[in-house]
Image (cartoon, rainbow, N blue to C red):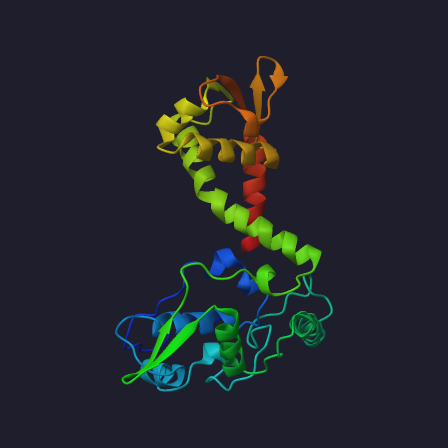
Length: 268
């Protein structure tokens, strides 16, 4: 995607729902799901009353390339102007698009929902699924979104691979800040020690996190191969550590840096 997601010359601040990425809908819906959620999030601000068409007219004179023009724009699973990654999808854009549509349509049909073809159709599904709500008042339409979005798996029959990926993504987003907090302490305060004798209580005090959160971060270190937790000479389960009991945290910084470097290069 090459387009800047900001709207040219907005007359109000755009507001994205904080739960969008955590919920995993971006991996299920056509690409217009993101800008539609951004549009509805903006419509949900207290100072707006009207239809989504009214808002689109207000913020960008009725035409927004990111959403496909207007609410009657066709849904797609890829960005027309993006360079196609033939390593990730060697079948090409057309075949990939057809496959994604088949999977998406099957999910919705099995669950008893109509298959949307336009952004407007998708907005109606948002209302059906509870991702958005609107109320008609004498002053016009009031929009709102729930604090926590319904999860795709609660509404649609996801295949096992996608369900597992979404669960993992949510777990990573939950644990990422906890891991970062512990890493900051190990790298910046301790200078990447090969080994330390410590406890959950001590790490919690040093990082400003709770002992349970530190336990989760340690478990992620161990699961990723970046560290070992030992009691004496024996491996210990990070998930079962008691808050006050001491243990040895043995870091594998070579693995850590090699893995992080690989992941960083993969995003470029």
